[in-house]
Length: 92
Image (cartoon, rainbow, N blue to C red; front, top):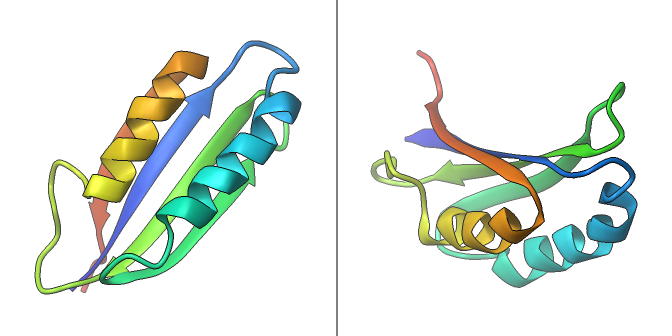
């Protein structure tokens, strides 16, 4: 089964430039766990202080509440702004 976690972070204005190295470090440290296919970070084209991390998985089943990797990232990022975390299943 293929599924994806989406973690959105909204920081104070111009805070994302400071945060980007931390986000990249988190991505490297939390990468390569069982079933993870890819992890990428995106910046909002209009709002420089919004970031989004996509974690793509291939596993026997999806984790509806999120993976340990995703939940760890959410826990750390909550100190820096508003965080939204959701799990998406690939459609047939």
